[in-house]
Image (cartoon, rainbow, N blue to C red):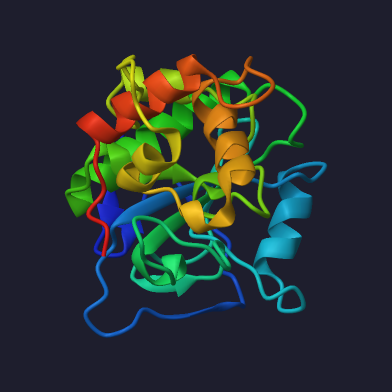
Length: 231
C-alpha cells in the first residue's frame, strides 16, 4: 500500500474523522518531530470518541487502529493537542512543532502486525514529505518522562530503526548517562530516575535497577551518533 497525500498530509488510504480540539500552528513554526503515543483504551472507536470530542481538550493528527485502519483526525498543517507539557532538545511547546500519532493499544499488549505495517507506511510518508531524519521520531515518554509512559515497553522501536524510521544505539563504553541524555535530546531537568525509565522503555526494556554500564554505553551511542540541536 502507498499512501497518497495532499498538502496537509495523506489523502487516499486514510479515513477522515475530524477533531473538535486543535488550533493553528504559530507563524513560522516548522514540523520537526513525530511523537508516538498509545491510546490506553479498549478499542479504536473509544479512542476516536475521546480524540474527536470537545470535552477532553485532546486530539492527534492520526490514529492507527489494531486492524491497520488509519484515521486522520487533524490536518498536518494544524496544531493538534497531543503532547502536553514537556520538551525535547531543550525546547518546549512540542505540539507546535510536531505531528502526533496515536496507536490503538491498551498499554499492556503487543502491538498488532497490521498496526505496525501501516504505521511504517505512514511514518515513511511523513518523514519523506517533511524532510525529517529518523531521530525526529520520538515517544511521548521521551519528551515527558516524568508523567508519560507511552508507547511503552511493548512497542518495537528496533523494528522501526531497522527500516530507517527511528534510531537504535551502538554501544560506546565510558559515557556519562545524564550528560549524554541531554545531548541526545532528553529533558534532563526531569531527573535521572525519570530519564532512566523513559530510556529503558525504548532502548533497554529488560534492564532493572540503577543506571548500569550498559545503559551508559547505549546512551553514549545515541549522543555520539544522533546529537540534538539543543537550544
